[in-house]
Length: 533
Image 1: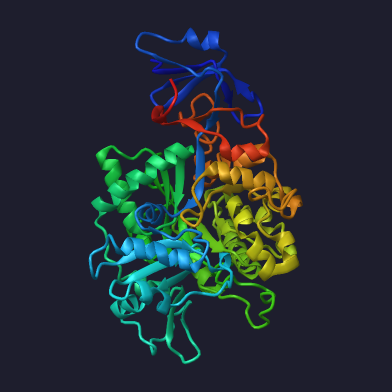
Image 2 (image 1 turned 90 degrees about the vertical axis):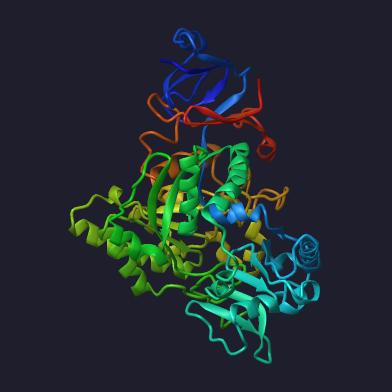
């Protein structure tokens, strides 16, 4: 029985065999027919709903292949210091939130970036103490790899001047050896773990706001990299009948033993909520200069970044996970980190081959791949490792990258390099590090510009085509999720996940892409958001 018909549209299938049609039919969450208006209308029976698109454009649903869903949900209700233009403005926002907060309650927020400030200097606990002396304050950096806290937060966590640095992290200190309120990498957990936890029900309620925003942005699926508390809340949404996004849930390092002991393997779950890969961190990030590099940061001859997991330890984790049916997804930003992770995957690929397992059974990924050594440029393709990249990072980070990496940026944020070598690409946003707006990511990938600058694009040889970019937001993530046989394109038998745009994305000027309007988002044949007749 046909339930829904869309006619009089510009339906872009992303299938080279038949790139466009004007109509499609949907039944029980699946696309069952595509063609012209007349042949699809003939399929309509009693009770079928017919939607006249009036020339609007339809695309397969867009996927964010890397974000932090719990953190994003929390960010929507936290103090907003995202890309605050100055330290003073960030402090003003904390002061505004303090006026709405009871004495002694925690204040949290996300998104500050000292590189946007005139002096580019890290802030301190004294800055926060001046505006919030009695409420603990924890603000994570835009990169997610540094935290800014006040004295009350340090005290609540029991962090003193003599507290040793945790493995893989650093408590920044002033010239007198006093903890100055900046926490790097795993040191962030010392305070973050003291922030009062929400119940699963509370977090699920918060996720509804994030999900509504995702639908308005054209997202139909996400790949999440947050902790098990996120999985709990997602399951609650599923139980309530409120989960309207498909989710691939990664397993973070701290919970690997529990996952393996339970016998969970990749793809455990269903087309709504499924287990993906083990998640590890090889290094830090560009902003706090903790991304692991072969050569030092410009102007800092002794700073090569920071490894977070030793290579031999990574091999052990990835090998164990692979033997038990889980691929691995490893955060690597610096060129040395990417190199080390490729060495890890090369070793584990040999083990998989010795067991007789096909490469496609372990869809390993490198998250970010922000800068690659020239000698490693073709290794992701050789090892069939997915390049999980975020095009928006290039235009967001370019000024900072120029300062810290110099001429090495020819090989930075470069999906063109990976595609030319034959690597598979999956695109995302890293939200809440960046907004989860795929149209912004599409624009960044094809223009390498931010607000028209630099004219012609930053390292323009790294630009990719619109078609390649759309595949990176559709088919690439579907492949990474082992769902390419039913997701990522609009074909007969595929899941009915699609979006409606006000204009043809292939016909507008590239600078107009961020201004396109998502008028409808359908997941599993159901309109989750619709703003057209």
